[in-house]
Amino acid sequence: MTVNRLAPQEAPEVLVRLRGLSKSFGDVPAVRPLDFDINRGTFLAILGPSGCGKTTLLRMIGGFIPPTTGTVEIDGHDVTRLGPERRPTNMVFQGFGLFPHMTVRQNIAYGLRVAKRPRAEIDKRAIEALQLVRLEEFADRPVKQLSGGQQQRVALARALIMRPEVLLLDEPLGSLDLKLRHAMQEELRRIHHQIGGTFVFVTHDQSEALGLADRIAVMEEGQMIQDGHPREIYSEPTSRFVSSFIGEANELAGHRLDGRISLEAGGEFASAGPEGSVVIVVRPEKVTVGIENLETDISLSGTLVDAVFFGSFIKYSIHLDGGEEIAAQNVETDTNASFKVGQQVQVGWRYRDQRVFEI
Image (cartoon, rainbow, N blue to C red):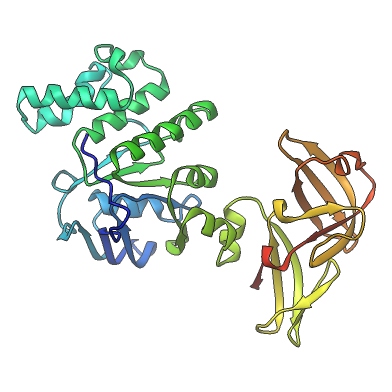
């Protein structure tokens, strides 16, 4: 497999350029007009709930669906009017799409045979692809005798053997059980690191996106509403939707007046912005639980209603005196290990760890 990684000093190179791209089915917009660039060597996850337009966007990049407006450019070439067979892309579908009557090797080499490549080249590249997905010992086994995870690796190898500029993955792990999904996530990370290709991965699973991608684009109702590094998406969401869709988040109601926000759960703090209703968002792992004198910027009182031990942390549920519920995830200590359900506690967090969104 050809290694395609950029040297550390090189500036990112745009491989895929989308301009004014949209798709409507009748009067229903599936993807609203967007401009978006994908750099060479990126592992991009397009993330969003069902029906947000992420798969439609992926299929427009691959040439399976014609756009209503806009253009798709790959490696400097306008491919908007080209079919999938004429684009430097390949797609891995959720259903694998393997030929059950063929062996693993025959499935992997199928695209090269259709392209009428020389036999020696086909054999060489098939061996490389088998090695890449660690299936050498299964080369001559009928594909229908493989496990789900092994079949997924065959589908990956069949796509990668064509050496696409862009590998498109349409929720390829969706049909696997949890253990296999985690195993295949590790395989995808390893393969991407090994070959340095450009992967565009569609998923509705936020933990999958966080664990796989080096860039995440979040979609909602056909619009790209935020993109960036996974840490940025998680820690600095730009909308209430992103904050709640990516990971777990507490939401507390408040009201801004005269440059200060008063929380319905109690407490207030300075905050510039338009007057009116707001919601405060804070991650559970940023919420500290204690008895008194918390070293936090905001401190609220409540009653501990649940505590669950998860090994590396304890998850607490607290009913605040103001009537709202809040969750916290804290590493176990001698102090908090003695907390009892029904006990009065304090919860708090730093200003820097909260986000404020107008309603």
